[in-house]
Image (cartoon, rainbow, N blue to C red):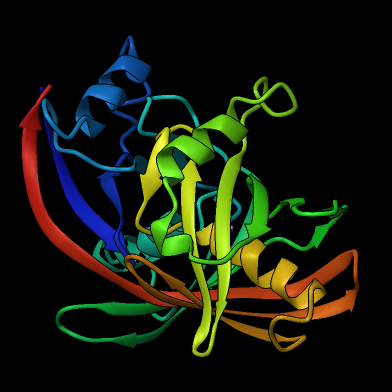
Length: 266
């Protein structure tokens, strides 16, 4: 069977995008192993995850996100932004969208569209129930995140240190994404170890959101806006801080681009 796909990236976080409105992948056996093979950078297309755009009755479309290990994932911020740009290329939406994801409905806007990239603004879920420990935070921004602020984050072995935390007794069962952040003059620099990818990625949208919120709590940024600097590029996060345990009206904005289109025999 020949499957057509598009490869998108949002600040270096890359995804295989498939128009699945005909439900072709939903009817296949061993979908998890197939997706893992497609995301494999040696034997497949290669990506941090795979996204299916499905038909929906209560929104413009449904986004089904799978991690690189083939397992169904929770909300992916950069994936959501990429999905909006992909849906626009399919003619499903114009400048705005409401789509269904694992954590509910999301609004999104195409702020600017150029030949090489599209600027997409995505509304994230409200965040509450933030756990503040002596040297780290734990919160859920659509996906669970661990955030700690350190110095010289560029020199960290993110793979090893992130993996140690992700597979620690406290987080091993459900897994957690691990963010190491550092306050810079131009914003908050962050590197992220992602569960499901089980490695460092160049950017993480829900991670950027988690870092922005915890930076606000720690008074490292303005109480309504934070610029995040990831290895793959810059993201902007705006929000309303109701108190130290409730953030609403959260928006994640950054560039998205289609890297290439192709087809593969599965």
